[in-house]
Length: 116
Image 1: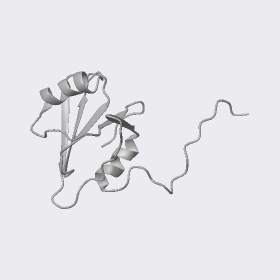
Image 2: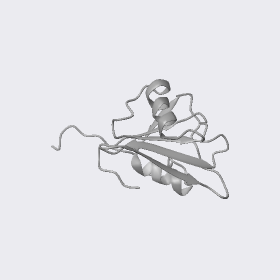
Image 3: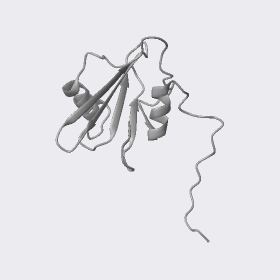
Image 4: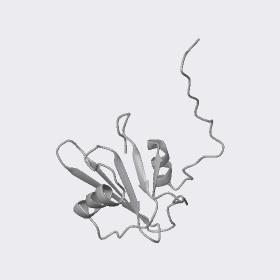
């Protein structure tokens, strides 16, 4: 899954009823999570057992819903007091691959305001 720069990933931390489809999830994004479902950003949800992920996003002319279901194992879902966690696209990719989203051995992200 590849998206252009500027696309954010929002992960709903609590479990989600996976019977929800585009309409139910877009309403949840708007009302419960308080985000704009038409923003083009990715909104990821998981079931109680963490064996399924759904990703909802708006793609210029309509909603897209992507789903992955594991036949064995579970996704390494984050534990957080927050209702929504913002991720980088690579962290979502790691999650989908079964890796920890927060790589403890990775280099820290640097932020500079000037070059010299």
